[in-house]
Length: 247
Image (cartoon, rainbow, N blue to C red; front, top):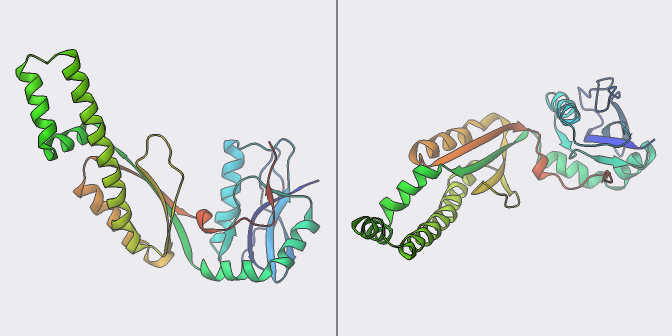
């Protein structure tokens, strides 16, 4: 049976959650595979592995349990190796790399910050900050709403102004929060968010980042923030000794 990999820790990690329930239905038991002075948290890999909510939570719970007692390199959901021997061989082969990454992430956690525009509020901000848009809108109002072409032109001008504001606000969020993190990872662009950033911070001083986010929210009411964390530092770990499950 294939081996599912949750994360990698030092072999002498004080609280490796062996015997804990992991993914699968019924839940599969977590064990460790050791090699190169490291320990991989693993379980059997269920057939037809899919990102179901129960399994996603189980994956995170194993990492949270281990992370509470020391640093763990988290693998992304769906990391599967051929068997325990393949995991042990990978640990031996890349021991120096994993040990360097563990040291770099020592006592670090990840916070993910997604930002979107409040549509009504950003329209007010665009109108307030763009005299040309205000003048065009006023011209249409004076003309009883304006012609169809006038309305289309206003819509195009407003859309371009909002797009420019999205870029401006995304850059402002990044610039304001980056000084409070050891590293920043930008997620691929996705619909609905003007920016999606993950920040690597020292667990003991994460309040600096959280305070900066609160200050941004207060200063820019047209921005809507979604904060998730603290998390294991998923975005700051290179691929591990397992390949994503097929399908």
